[in-house]
Image (cartoon, chains in turn cyan, green):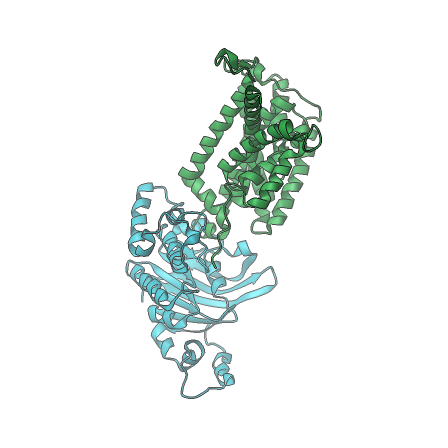
Length: 266
Length: 309
């Protein structure tokens, strides 16, 4: 078993001092692995990722319980800037490209924390090698590129800080299935180069296909975890998240049954 | 038509336009990097030039006083970021705007409190005794025989300073890493944080730079209108400038300033009768801005709203 890179221990997150978004999420990203975090709308995927990247306070959220460790250091109050420096990069949900900057400028913003501009040039080439599609568009404004291209820009931007761990939030959002596959293929390629991933996804099928481990989160709580392949084989996951159940219609009440069970961990 | 007179009006307009541009740049800088319309720009000008004047009145030399005043403005800028902007980060932009209104009120009282509310004169010529400035205007007819107009040397000096500042700022924004991060921050705060741009540092830099711009433009304006509360009024003229030039563009601030400067002078001289008498210079700039808004709401060089559909 390889070393743990990111360890979330039973965290609780509260927005605006009243809204309880996460109530006990425990999660482990091992070095060199791709981990998928699945769940429906509002289940707490993004909050989990933002808790890791220290972006919560920008939305008036705070971790009230539990710890987050990265490389065995507590990072709950490390500051977004320092985290990027230490090798954790986040790709936000909905891309968040700088629309008035050119594609290349967008990617270069990711190298802000780096001192050496020569290395940044090399990294830029590396990004273009992974994302050939945006190389040809590098002089155009990011706001005018397509959704898939923006996803690539956002990921390229994150790559510029040479991260060890990328927190990828809903890469498939609003993309054609073919593009989703393309993005995940790139994730896999980057993973081979040694970058670990924590991916929040709604598209469970793709996310589990490319992941090593999977977590399913519901109402701010992890309700299932396991090897990605095992999760894919579970009948309840199949019905609830993959949309392939057993023959005939299943009553929704029966599906709920699986999730009412209290999870044995947390 | 009297062509020589027209040229004189044009030159006069351009030179006063440069002064508007200078103030407008201060607005643009803050707006570009943080999306805040800084209502306190005028009082920053007043505070900066008042600080400078009081120091020189107490016998401190020109360069020392300039240096200290710049230092104070930098400290003031950083403090503004720390105590006004930072606690309100990621809030509604209107809240931030209101904060700058409050800042303006505070600064107005504060500068009266530590200095005074008297009207001070500022003779830049007295200080800049380095052969650069001659209190006498240039007689253009000495150089070009048929061009019988006067150009004040101070105006030329002011234009040179403004030009220099524009070049430096343009370079800073387009070519440096800090400039790039400033533009990134202005586009999307959250994303900027996610890629590791230290938001607080960037904002502190912007406010510090704006403080220095306020000092420079404050001194140039003070030379014209004296150091007093009229200075704040003068700044209001920068509003039509940024409306015409575009809130997000430094070149826009320049061109907008020139358009307003020339426009109001030409309007005063050739259109006054149409509008019923002299004195339209006072409001003609705002009228121009209003007309412009109808045609092109984002200004000449302003950023178009990019929206994916």
